[in-house]
Image (cartoon, rainbow, N blue to C red; front, side, top):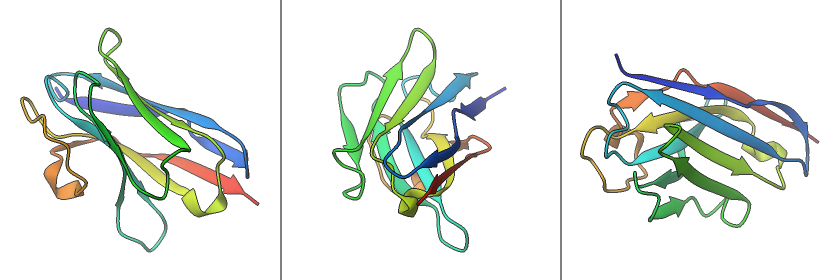
Length: 126
């Protein structure tokens, strides 16, 4: 059974940091590009960052470049998102996603991702 489980969210003050984790099981992440997406209330799900399964290639949204870092630990089957200098504008539910077995290319559209976690809330207070 494919499972992606996020952790590490919560409430943080503006300027603070959080690290999200996504534990993967099953074959969802096998040779698969993975990504993080954010959805604020009343808005569409938007791309945050993505990474190839080897970790050799990454892409981030312009709004988070220099502040957010995506990484992957294949020994632990875990995807990470280190978020620094947090701002209230990044508040939302964060989702971990996998494109699917063998799908290595990085895309920023959520429609290109086949597997999703349940999401975790991140709230940045001003």
